Image (cartoon, rainbow, N blue to C red; front, top):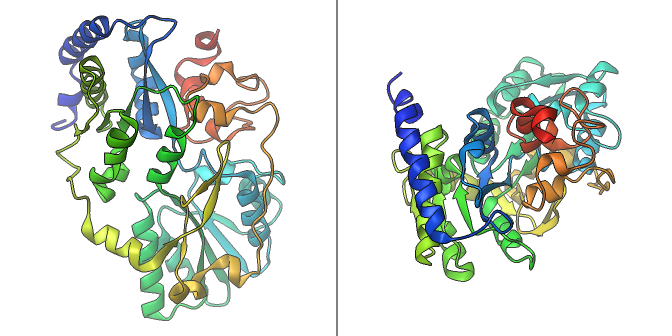
Length: 373
């Protein structure tokens, strides 16, 4: 398939692995203190495990898995808030499929549906809006998840609902942003990551300029990458070449899709509909200032939490679940004591085991307990 097969060519992959090994040898790190490159996006994590890219890296280079999967960072309290809305008899609660299985303290949305709540999977906020039009006697709520990648589609749906006067549609806003999160990670004293493979989907919207602070303030390289195996290998090589040269720049491997200035129309929709929340909670990472989006006052009529008087609350993560340490690159998935024991894809206790883009789910699927051992 054109534009796909070219990025899965085994011969080109072999050449890239050889060059990666050559540059890694020049860097001179050891297995005990490897060069650590964090792939921010869960889509990259899935590709790395699916194609076993990590298995062919030299011993002094390793991937760390970052907080770029929006389902993986859903805090337990937000799931409980969603369940509280979904259980109301007048509500049709809609969400993406992965979010239905994320555990809160009071179960999952899927379990709430089994107990009688009207919870439905949709593929876009427009599907939820269509349900609102078709069910004028019901309140339809869309669980709005995702980074800057999905925030524009929710914003445009809110604008359409307002223009059409669809008064029985609202959103529970859990949109989050990547830049404050990366700054928070880099500001931690024990954050031992040498460079980043930047998210392709988010960067399609925001461009590459917002990452400049990573190079200027923290002297780490970042290379925005696509999602095919050769995309990731080329981006890794570009990061390693900068590390070897003692450089820190922002580069764009995914230039065939990501423009430097991003998508102005998408950013305009975000700016028109949302404002930045003072703080936002992330599962496993705690509260990060300025990392969440909420509806501006002009659009508060579409805020489900205000409509149903829901007060967001905090629920601590399970003690045995170390999602936060995996998301910050401190441990690998199998180093979590719950991995493969109390936490599996069939019965997840941590959100990283739910989504196919979660590091734990990807590791379990493609390497499993044998790989963990």
